[in-house]
Image 1 (tube, one colour):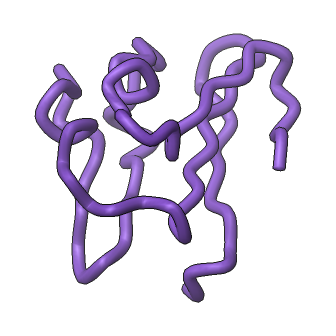
Image 2 (cartoon, helix red, strand yellow; image 1 turned 90 degrees about the vertical axis):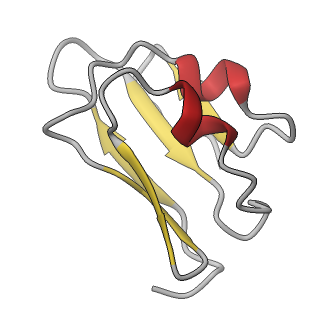
Length: 79
C-alpha cells in the first residue's frame, strides 16, 4: 500500500467509520497504547486496524495528537 492511499473500515455495528491518513502518521504509537482491544498495529511504517478486534470505542481517535485517525458517525469517509 502506498502512503497516499487512505485506509478505512466500516464498523461491525451501526454506521461508524474509522479513517486513517497514513501519509500524515508519524508512528508515535499513541493509538496503539490506548486501544483496549489491541486492535491497532504499526508495522513497517504502516498502521492497521484489525477489524475483528475493534469495538469502535474511538480511544484511538481521541489520543492521536496530530489527528491522523478520524471518526465519522454518519458512515461517510471524509477525505
